[in-house]
Image 1 (cartoon, rainbow, N blue to C red):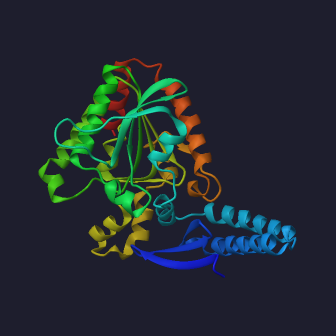
Image 2: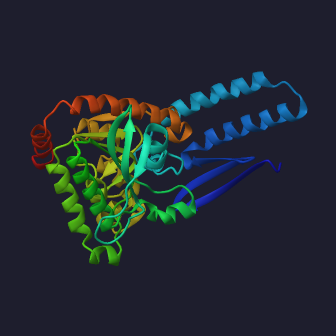
Image 3: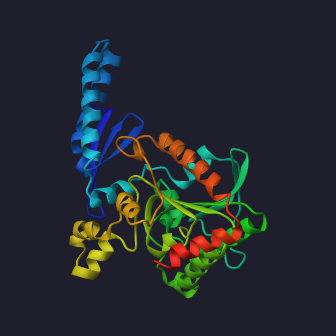
Length: 336
């Protein structure tokens, strides 16, 4: 059938099943095979119903109920490694989606006033419920071209200096800062090291610790290493339910400890990188629930939930003075 196509892609050792129905594209992870089969059958029946005038609504309803049950069963028992795969799903909501759907009067600001603009970092001013805020987000991109444009969410030194500049800008005008993080880590290239990558990350952390305004950070997908910590040194740290936050990727950890990347599942278990583990360890403050089947199945719904949480947390942190905000962040991050 020309309207239905299934193909398999192998990317970084992960199996991706892509089912295409007309112009819509669904990306299934390897552990979602039963889900992909059910969704394929549902789409096929819907196509037959609409094309041949056959009323098969009852059968579709039964399959949709099976699909919901399968999604609940699958996503209620995800392993840490499976959560890594979900966190990396290309259709999860990106900072650009959050800015577009959650904020008004978005005005982007660019450059680090020193070297250049880093396209991996979105920064600017916007309003949430008529309240102005400064936004900083690490953007991976969605398509091949946009991922290259945003350097796959790997921030260069000028990106961290840009973030530092925006935090100081927020201080000058007494505006809260909201950061959105989705990165595998800072860019490790030769040019980045020559321009002081480690120093730029350290300075960004220092500026966040000393900021007299509230900072709320949300990890939406991957929170990788110091590249994420630089923007997560905050008054409140939130995570989407199936996002991850870790000092190193499971593959990187496996390569160091076992001299092979084949032990990534064992590494993922040991790293305690899931939102649930990190809430227990008090590394984060809140988990934003995702719809059944994760955020990529209903991005608008999870963005709405995130918005409610941000509004609630903003009201809480805006009650503190600048010195209280600085003291609480330093106590939290320097006295671990």
